[in-house]
Image (cartoon, rainbow, N blue to C red; front, side):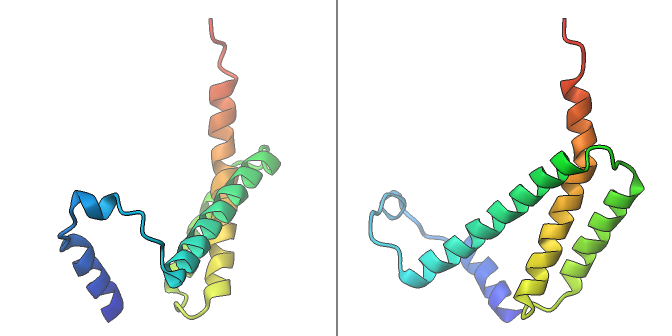
Length: 114
């Protein structure tokens, strides 16, 4: 928890200049690995939401909303050391969010536009 507090403090205590932003210095390997993991996780969550929207178009209702909320709550209360479990809960929650949002997008695309 202390790491998170220090990270937030460092984020808001910036003394960055324009040169720092335009730097073309190589990214350290540990930062590159972290970025790759974050973007891979976001890609998986986005794909899961799109797949849920596509597959469960007819399965609307409270089930998908309640299941996604339960999944995100379980994700919140899972320890940070259970990385695979947290990733699974994120993917399941994104899938269910996509399934519940699929009806909204279908409704908007089927509106008779004149």
